[in-house]
Length: 172
Image (tube, rainbow, N blue to C red):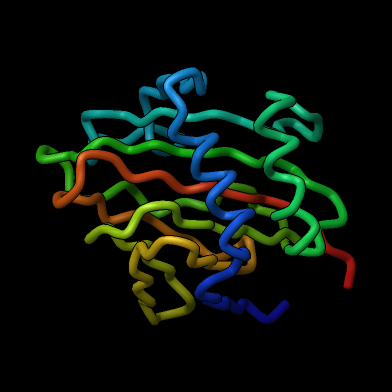
C-alpha cells in the first residue's frame, strides 16, 4: 500500500464549520480528561488533554456530537467510522511534543485531522525517511493513510487548541 497524505484548506463551508465550532466551544460540551497523549504512555507530555468521542469502538458515543460530525463524515466519503474524537489541548509549557504513534494500525484505514484553532502547533508525519510538518490552521483538513506515524508539536501561543480526529475506512 502506498502511504500518502493530503492537506485541504477551507475544507467545510462557513456555516457547517461555524456550527461545529460553536458546539465544541459551548460551556455545556462535556470534555473528558485523558491523562496520556499516546498509548503506551510516554513522559513527553505532563499535562494530558481533554477528549470527546462522537463515535468510538465502531458505535456512536455522544449522540449530539455524532450528529454535528455527520456532515464531515459525508464529505470525507467515510464508509465505516472507527473513531471520531475531538481533542482539546491546553497550552503546554512543560512539554514540547507527544510521541510518534498511529491511531489505528490498519493498512486500509484513513486518519484525518480537522483543525479548529489557528496556532503555532504542528502535526508531523513520518513517511519513510521524510518528516512532513503541517501547521494548525482553522478549517484545514489533514488526511493520511493510517499506517503513517504522526505526532503533535504542542502550541505555546494560544490557551487552547481544538481538533477533531477521524479514523475510518473507505472502500474506494
